[in-house]
Image (cartoon, rainbow, N blue to C red; front, side, top):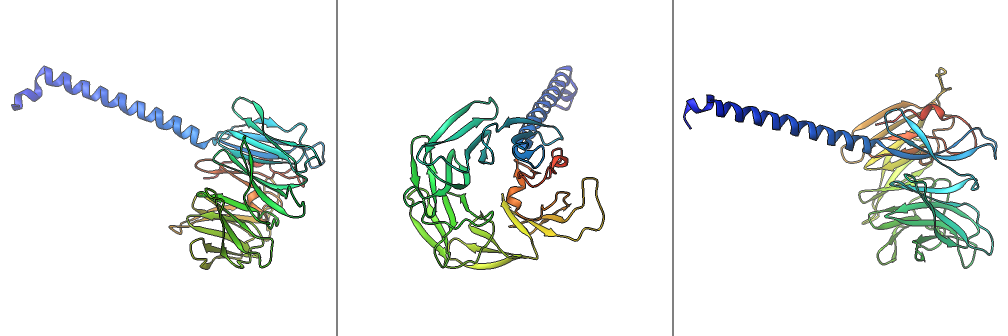
Length: 336
């Protein structure tokens, strides 16, 4: 091509056309990324609202767009204190106490349409934890056979399968389901950390006595657990144990981050009350720290698993229990 051709009318038109195509392409990419961002921030979470007195309190499921807006998408009318699990846009729930001698329904609700179906029916006397993983439910309840110990069952729409031996259920500590395996603490002495291969249902011991007494969770080949005011992790490959954090009140593990709360002595009253806890998170690979500051909810420093609900890029802070009507101030706060 000669130098003159670059400045020919035809060359000029081609250049202008390319510029238009570039701008159109950039606009389309921007709109796509914006729509993806809106979807990524969206999160469903549950919360007990309208005071502390049953039956005045109502257990509800909210939706937030991550930008300050929220709405009620489901209200539990006839199921007080339900066990719940949310995966994608599905809500699973069941009463904590079943009806002796007759099946109790476990429900699945499509939070986008409101459709409520019976997911499965089973007879149980008392249940303490429900988790959803890959469209299947994992349910910690009294043994169907002996009724004297807690067992984890895997529940689908077709069947119910026993997954564990006797499980220790202490406070927020129950079990974790990640990477095709289920982890729990054995109720039998010496309270070992156990692993269940969900493909074969084979049970193996990871650590004989990890000492966890509160919540524990899983991330990238390690189980993280709490003992008094310290956090430890255990390798699921060889049982190697190490100290992770000290002087903490509660922990929560999510997406490669370890979230920790610290109890603090209140010095001044904030707009929503007197803070008594600080929240921070540490990236388990890079060590990067995110400090979220003080949280204005009474008792937040305990049981983070009951207070944090995660979307794709952040989380909301809630208080889903009957001890206080505080927590409304957090509905328009999305933490990154």
